[in-house]
Length: 230
Length: 230
DNA sequence: CCATCATATAGTCACAATGACCATAACTCC
DNA sequence: GGAGTTATGGTCATTGTGACTATATGATGG
Image (cartoon, rainbow over all chains, first blue to last red; front, top):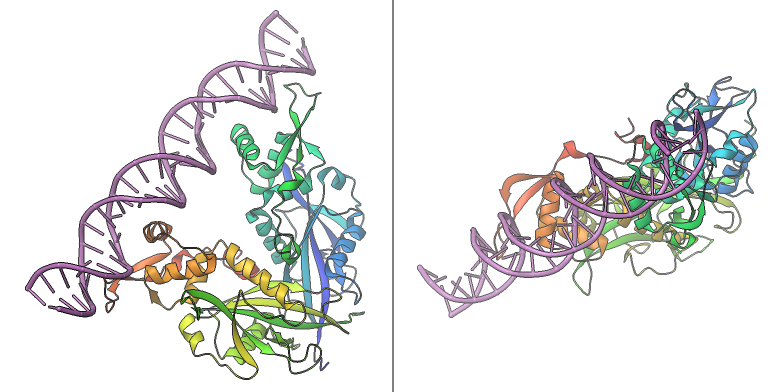
């Protein structure tokens, strides 16, 4: 091994959750950041992450980072991109393999927050350390241009959900209102959800049906690992 | 820097070119492989690549690899995925950042071939070293599911081209015949090509128009670097 | 120079997908 | 019981697209 390799390998994760915006009350994307406790960029907010242990799988490192930061388990985790520009970290050459994850909204509400961990609305971030603003921008772009909304929405929701909740997820991600009737038509035609027969009562209006995901309809895209590749 | 990092960083590239199939004469995808001249997997075919020099950008390393292997310059180069499974290389932990590239068809014809470099049809590869078969499969999948066929086709063609040539590229990538009239209608509506006003004479039939790419229509997806991200 | 060949290029028709709306259903709250 | 509010079922027009038909036009070979 004539390794003249001088780069250090890191794994970072962009973690998304859906929660109501403080002002508007609408569902929006939020993500947790950690405050840097050492140079460079001491004191600035950054993506959760760390050096890659030599004996840990890439996705496992991302997942662990996520758990250590938020106490949560991702319902969706996928490699985003590898950033390795020479100048992205002062001093050493750092190559960061970045993952993006989605965590369930209601669980995210109870997620750990502390002096050095804080959630921010995805579209109003402070200036982050390194090139992390660019990384988040790219993650947002991927999230929004992802064809496969089905699994994404699933990751944000629980086992059962109403079409209104599902619509909320789509509206938050796409940042535009969707017609309820048309949305229902499309979703039902896609066959990705199944009527549980149950209804959700309690609201001051007609009780909506509860749906569940149709597991048999996964047309996945789990990177090169997914079933579509085999 | 408390780097307990034990992984070695490599960069590999999946290089595609379009050339006529030997038997059918139809355009198909080919890619160059290099024979391994050391253990592990000595003698087996593998993707071109090498260790990442500490002072070289990732894309530059991929591009250099490509030039050293084929003598060609890529007209399209994009990061594919980073493979880092613990067991993918016997002995050391190797993390490979893989790029995929497209080279122009007519240039690929004159590409270097030697004892240790050979072109193979993409759908009839031998058993490759490491997990490289899986990597090629994933690259093929990405190529075929890429929304942005425009830039892909452009990469395979020259400055100007006929719609028939463009159609050939699409047919080769998608592996199915396309209706000439419908194809023309769609492409013209997309606004991605511009009529040069010139025609290509010489064939024993009506001379087709020559088109050029409409540079202003790039709705790119150059990873996080592209104009769409800014 | 004309007939033929082979592809280029222009239309047509039917159908699927989708956005914009309209109407009715069925709970809770007052 | 009526009002308020969302759920859910339709309609209509527009668009995108596959399947096909018809015409255009230069090259070739007699």
